[in-house]
Image 1 (cartoon, one colour):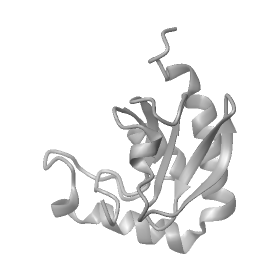
Image 2 (cartoon, helix red, strand yellow; image 1 turned 135 degrees about the horizontal axis):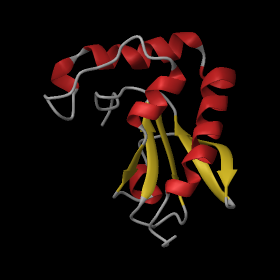
Image 3 (spheres, one colour; image 1 turned 30 degrees about the vertical axis):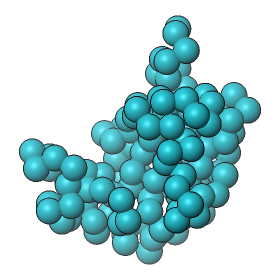
Image 4 (spheres, helix red, strand yellow; image 1 turned 135 degrees about the vertical axis):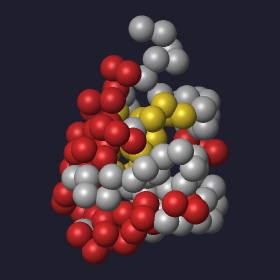
Length: 126
């Protein structure tokens, strides 16, 4: 495994994210965030199709990504982020009201695991 390979951490990331969705996010917030996926004009690629009936587990499997954007770059000052867990002593963050989950091996590493509840649409304030 190279430093840049985050595949071994996806299962841990999934566990933290799904625990937060099921125990803390709330059904109303899930539905609000998923409503963005019903708006194709908000998609990051016009070729994508939303699975609006996806469970959190299904959506995570479809939408989790390794992104070339550090945790520090993701957590801009306008966003309120909450630490929801830890992997390898690094925090997993949830960005309130945006549906963004993010984790990286280092805060400034240009490779992160990221999941958007709004997928395939951009988060509300992105």
